Amino acid sequence: MTKRAQMRTLAAENGDSDEAAGHTEADAIDPALGRLVEAWPTLPEAIHLLCDAHGHPLHFHLTAGQDHEATALKPLLEGADESLVDHQGEPVAWPLQLAGDKAYGANWIDEYLLSLEIQPVIPSKSNEDQDDRAVEFDREAYRGRNIVERLVGWLKESRRIFSRFEKTAKNFGGMLKLAFIRRYLRLMCAD
Image (cartoon, rainbow, N blue to C red; front, side, top):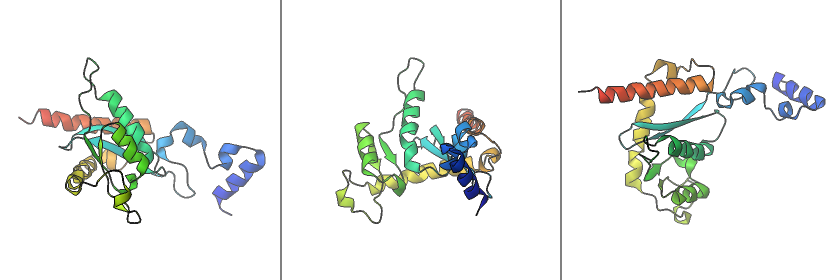
């Protein structure tokens, strides 16, 4: 019996439902770091990014590594809606199209994006019929998805981001914001 299985059994015998369900104290403190798994200290956190057509970062959301990507879509867009405003509270940026990989290919995501007047650019999974989707797939627009991949590649050039020195999601998010500020300062001072 593994150490983790022993912890679950012991927790179940003591009636501690959180431990029995596999939730640890670390999950409650900082859920974006991921849960503890036997030999691995933590699963890496996932960075969900929203950028413009030029690859400039607009907003990010952190989740635990074991969470599915689609669970971060609503918090990412809601956070962008709250933070992408000018000094008078008027929105300054909002996506017209949102490209995502096949993990975002679900009917509820298509409906959610359409309700926000955002055109989903998400391919169907191999086991799905493209004709059953409410939205026609725009292959030409999907080719622009590499913009966010290039943004991720640029982020990996920041040592504190790619090596994840930070132990908490709050500090890691702060390092992401500093990297974004650095990028915008370089754009502004490029003259």
